[in-house]
Amino acid sequence: MLSLEMKVLKNHIKRYATALGVGVAMIGALSTQSVQAQVSKIPPPEIGAKGYMLIDLTTGQTLAEFNSKERLEPASLTKLMTAYLVFAAVQNKQIALNQNVPISTNAWKSEGSRMFVEPNRPVTVEELLNGMIIQSGNDATRALAELLAGDEGNFAGLMNQQAKKMGLTGTNFQNSTGLPGPQHYTTARDLAVLAENIIKDFPELYKSYYSKKEYTYNGIRQPNRNRLLWTDESVDGMKTGHTESAGYCLVSSAKRKLPNGVERRLISVMMGTSSDQARTQESLKLLNYGFQMYETVKMYSKDQAIASSQVFKGKEDIVPMGSRGTDVLINVPKGMTDQLKATVERKDNLIAPIKAGTRLGTLKLTLGNEVVAERPLVALKDIEEAGLVGRLIDSGRLWLKE
Figure: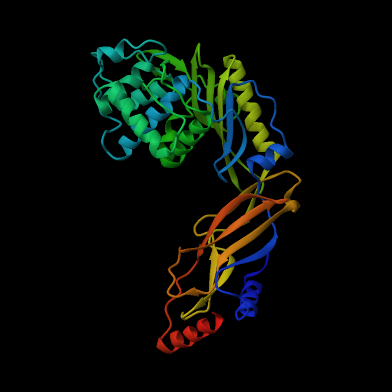
């Protein structure tokens, strides 16, 4: 990587030779990957599932996928969307965790897995969340749906509205629980996005509920069906699902700290396996593949100058560009770091004033001849407008460039 001083000097040398438009500068061998590059270089293990997806939340990269856009039955993975809407209502103070919730006959008589709520027994939102997330109780889930929308049909409408906002194009919900329905489906890719949104939008609520190994209500203790919570200490969620038609499903998330200090979080989505044991083993296999076959490299620190552009009519003639507020992290197939390169596409001959945070270019990362990742580059500081004389001089210089 070039030092900031070298970049500034390079810009001064190019100052009178660069035409108006977009400049491109090579800035050395760096680290990145893409789904296509990774799959071709390090094939994922054999996975016995109808569809799966593995993503890295730390870098935003997809590490492996199979039938990830195929519409499949989600079973109780549906409850991830129910949880998202309840979390949002709690965060927005529409409801409170200690709020008592009336239990309807419809919720009480729910079929399938249950929390065993009773119509005349007080139960809070917090208890129902534990019952839904840990025990996968359909009765708890319906009670929460009715609390937010009056009935489950209205709540399904809210679920689909939120799915649309998230860009879940392969998803349609008919109920809050995941019981089979002719138009109740989703995809592995959509579930990965949904899980990511839960973790990012509600980190404290995620931490509070999804890692619990058991929950007792009404004198009945039930274990979390996510066996990975016992198998791998880095796993801290998320949700299981099963019906005869959907098979055994599991969305799981794990976070591990690397020797370089970077914390990686992966999300695995496993749909349509043959048994409880299979969904656990296949999910663990996929998570270990992601952690062991790829390393995460910190390419640049947040607010570090990666490149710079020429500025006219400003008090300064160079504006530094970088990733504002976020480190640039990239997953690299092990042993391939030296094969990766980075290129900056930027706007040159900028006109002041320029506000910090304004997008000025793009960091493109390549493996061989393939662009495998892109990151926006923004102005790292304000560039104020020059005085009248300075502006007039630069106007003349720009005119001579035409």
